[in-house]
Length: 383
Image 1 (cartoon, helix red, strand yellow):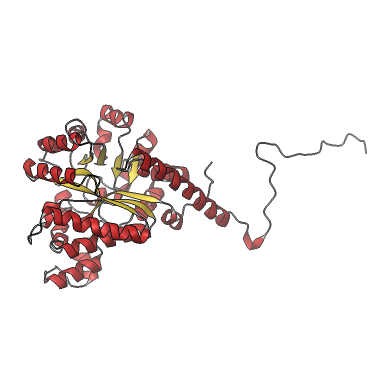
Image 2 (cartoon, rainbow, N blue to C red):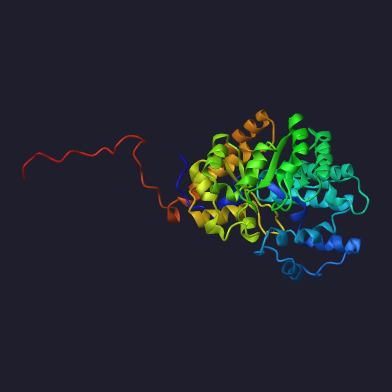
């Protein structure tokens, strides 16, 4: 039984977590963005953190996904060198480990980092080296998802799928399809996903964020997606919803990002709690730590406060993240056991602190579990 204790931001920060949906080019430190721009002679909209955050509308609502994605033009302008990619990947993993994320899956598209002559393999190697350095330092498990881009040619996605095959078991954990969803159907990239599936590689697809259930159906039935990125519009098709639930296909929920891109009106309108109550395997993720101005702990705090989650709910969501990771079954099972034990220890520690009587007063005695308290029968003697 999970004890009934206050759910504080401190507790959510302490619990072991995953971040399965996190874009490298949307998750720089703001200070790093400024420093890289200065080193590379890149002109930014502002030259101090506060002004740059305002100019990029960090953490603010946008009119649509396309407007939200414009911030990536700024971040990508400084992510065209090996050193910049290494530093960004390293710092991202360090930051994730700092909030007790035990596992981080970093996604990005190597073709977006070739403006200054890098080869795709150099891009992949630089990011992997940065993640490995952070892993040695903190113990976090970190790997890469290579992204095809919806609004680029299917041939480009196929080349990226080939790159994923080449780096299978060398740090690349899977393949993704990202980018503007509306007007760019996933089925156009089916050849790339067929190569991925033929090589027994995991894959996920951004779907049901800026387009409806047909986009999700394509992700599942044309691309063979093992997870769904966002999926907020899945609730519009009950039959498809049941298919996803029956097949235990995880949903990579990114609540704050979904509000900022206009995928949902506000947090109260987000289907996260409906999915959770229905039994879907839902996970909580950042999407873009810089652009969205968030962390996994912050996202957990937001949904806990909005939907009145219990500690048992939170535990189920966190465990779902580990169960949904693109690891081998045995590695995943071992990790799930390990983090469940850690959760028990952390919750017990917070319970001992939060439920302790004030001023060192002794705790009231309790009868043994399962047995009623012993009481004396009333006296039968007459006065």
